[in-house]
Every structure is written in C-alpha cells, then in structure tokens.
Image (cartoon, rainbow over all chains, first blue to last red; front, side, top):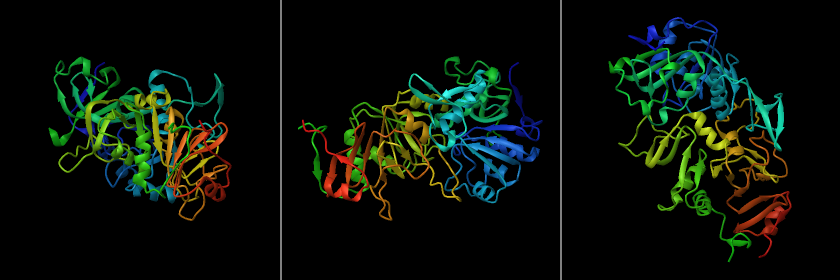
Length: 223
Length: 224
C-alpha cells in the first residue's frame, strides 16, 4: 500500500498511542521533523519512549515535547549539549530515564530492526560501562558485544521531497537517521518540504523507497 | 633520516595549533580521516591544499569542507558538532548506518580524538568523567575508537591540576580498550606499541624529564 498524503501534520500523527516508542529523526536540528513533533504535542500521547540521536535543543522540536512531560524515557547517543537545558533539568530532577547508546549502535540497532535481524555482535563498547551485563563472544580472536534491535511503533522523520507514492529523497547531512528509522517502525510518518507528482523523482536517486513510508505531509509553511 | 626510528627534539611546549600541525603532517596523502569534535577539528586547517585527504563526518558526509562563512550557512549541512560546514568537490552524503559502517568495517584510515586519559596499553577514556552529576553522552566516540584503522589522540600531556593524562590505567570510564595508536601532546608524541610507550618526539623537554613526571616506563625508538 502506498503512502497516504496528509493535508496537515495533525492528521499525520493521529492515532499515536500512549506508551509508544517513537523514533525521531534528525541530528541536532538538521533533519528534525519539527512540525510532526509539534503535532504530536497537540495530539497528546504520553508516556513515550523517544529514540533520537540527541535529547532536544533549545525550546523547540524534541525539547518542547520533553518540556510537556510526555516522554518517559530517552534513548540517544548524545543528550548533553550546550542548549539541551530542557533535558538536563528533567534528568537531574529524576523525571526522565536515559539510555545512552553509542551512535553507531543506535543506527545499527534500528537497521537490524528494519531488516528483521534478531540481534548482532558488535565490537563497539567492549570493556566499557555501556556493555556491562551484555553477552559477549569472541569471533576470530576479537571480542564482540551482543546488541538487540530497536524497533519503533512510530517513526517521525524529515525529508526533502516526497512523491505522491511516498518515495523520499533527502538533502545533505539532514539525511542522517531518516533512512534507517524509516525501515524500523510500524508506522513511518515523513515531513517533507515538497510533495511532487509520482514520476517526477528520478528513481535512481530515491533513498527511501515508498514501501517503508506510511504517511507524508508537506511542511505547512511551504504550502 | 628516517623519522620512524629517530627521536627528534624540538622547542616546546606546543600550543594546540602546533599539535594540530604535527598531526596534519603525519596524515598520509589521500587518507580518509575523521576529526573528532573540539580541538581535533583544528587539524583540517593544517592539511595542505593538495593533500587529497578526505574528511568524514559521522553525521553522513565525505569530503566535508571548511566551516561555513556568513552567507554560506545551510541548516541541512552541518558537522558532527552541529556547526554549519561546506562541501568539497567529490562530496558524498549517506545515512547513519552507512556512516558507521565506514568506521566499524575498517574503511576509515585515521580518526583523531581528544581524551581525558590514555593508558600505556592504549585504552582511551574520553566520553564521561564518571562524576555523579554528569550526564553521560558518548556520541560516536566508541565506534570511532574501535573502528578506525589508526586512532590518534590529541591532548595536553598534563591536566590543569598537573596530573598526567597518559597513565598506567585509566581512572575515567573507558571509551575503548587498546585502541589508541599514537598520542600527540604539547610536550611529546608517543607511539603505543606492544612493548609499551615509545617517545617519537619531544618539545622543550627530554625523555628523562618526562619519565620523571609520568608514572610510566618510556622507551626511545630503536635506532636505525
């Protein structure tokens, strides 16, 4: 089934349930689907687990969702930044759980989820706090840690363009986690700057094929 | 003279720009290199224009160019430190799983990282002080540390309180085990070898003096 084109971000995020695991694209603000996050705030789902590289910047986007108290747990690689004061305050006052995951593991664990891989052995983090309690195995003389997939109920991602079928292309480093998250969630919702007619995107340049995409919405300030 | 087998002595201590220049000098032409956030990014300023070195940024780009100047800023184009950057001819963009495959799959030639501590065995500690009120944040450091073919560390040899950062065993939480190949500091350059730490170069000091200040056995390079 091809992606459904939504008129508004509120329609795109409809039905996200309390307690969901939500994968949120972006690296800092590059590729962050701010309009979808704002819509999720209006939608009201709570007790969420958010998986994203960072834990919010400034007061907008992910930081705004955190500030509303909707997030129970953050799974990320790099929560602490110069402007991550919303997260810092919640964490220091014990109001939010944090699972720190090495950035490559974060990506690969979602890739595994999207590819149907049950778990994988990874060399990252061997002998560190982040591998404590995890199963290890020596393969060809090297030690690896067993890492499990991260599967989302929902992914909110930002892309540059979509066609009406739901194929996505990205722009520059705003691509980051988008293509991986698009494979790893039950419902994948993309915010794009422009929706073009099917057939306009060169098939050779499509990065996320439509099979992974459920809903598409064009950014409101560009319509 | 074979630089790999002779101890050289220069003036010092070096400032961070001079350390960056040393590292740039040792990066082979055409190498694929990731420069960590913070001081390692200075290395880019010292690479010759014709070096052919390709900079990788873990948020999904090869052939990253210099920081964007006014009028060039594009919110879709940033480095791992979220600083707006530019692209060079030959640039390529890719998603995060591919970006980290470049590290863990052994495709990246060199990464340059900062450090809180490096041990004599090449263990690296650079992500977390372990302080009770610290918010841990690892980013791509653990993947880089074990993934790049060569790991260079850039740091001062002593912390602000005078304690050595090159130590018998790291006290801070580890980033990676036995992953550091070479340590560039303001006072000396060290190779981590199976036989222990070898001093390649000193700046304004001597091996004997360093051995007195560090709680570590230091070797001189075998003479050619």
